[in-house]
Length: 372
Ligand code: GTP
Ligand code: MG
Image (cartoon, rainbow, N blue to C red; front, side, top):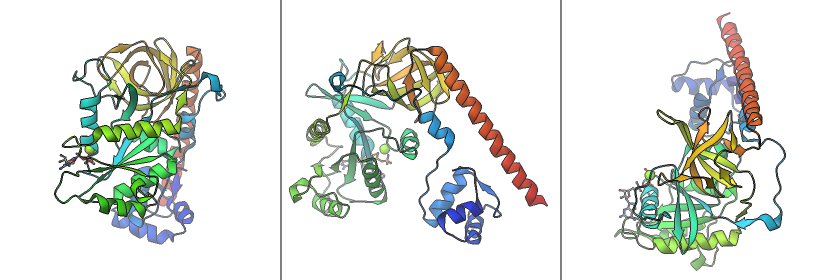
């Protein structure tokens, strides 16, 4: 929890405070034991000394929280929904190429080949079934969601280049997916290359507890070439298969819950947020709350820039109508009452301000002591 001083952090990780001060000095940061560390410095320091840290602040928890009780859906109200898929993997292993080739050949829109706009997610259609791809790997919404232990996706596609094998970020991705408890489908990419060694990749996977199906395990691996568009259909079919096994369901007939994937202030249109609807249906006119901001859905657009009046489970839509720009990773909820949404948002802003004041006060006290 922030703020944290050098001394508190040292205690937390069982390290001598002096060692941390030396490490900080090496990083060009002059600090004493009572100094508060900001998030960036902490992150760098933790990386330097090889410890894993996770931030948890009260405000963050709060922006994730729903207002009112969690609504349990009745079994008979649930309907099958498309899987939400992310592509993960090491640098240069072909994530973007894979996402692009799927987008290009499989867009769900009526006029395939039409100009798609980047909204952070898109849907592909495979044998009349939809798959929602989040198309910004390593995106900040994930980091935010992950830090809060919340889950954004249903299935992880792990891209491993067959000429390179498992690398540090591959390992990281495996750990994230395991921690989230979501199934991993391995896309062994670049099999067109002369030096591709897909069998070696499979061998390496077993070392991480991912035993390929053809080796007697239950990890689905598909050899693909994103560049030459080889076996992309097989990969997509495997995604459908896994999603059917997962029995992913939602209730389209209720107020929407979702997550902000990305958001920005558009000069002409005001705050614009891409929202991934996780449950329920988001409709034009719905009062909405996202983190510290609220509003009313004024307009919604899909990835083709087409205007929509509703968005059901697992769809991603650009939403206009927020009073301010929400943050990526914020929990989104539509409410019956716009006043309630506004009140909750303003309460949260007050609390945020209060706690910022408190931490400012703490910093300046520390500074004062330093000068004595
Ligand atoms: P980062 O976003 O930097 O992490 O990389 P990435 O994983 O998105 O990889 P990207 O799709 O940008 O591909 C990296 C390079 O590998 C590019 O030069 C691609 O053209 C190439 N590449 C991707 N897929 C294949 C493939 O199937 N075969 C071959 N031969 N090259 C590929
Ligand atoms: Mg990329």
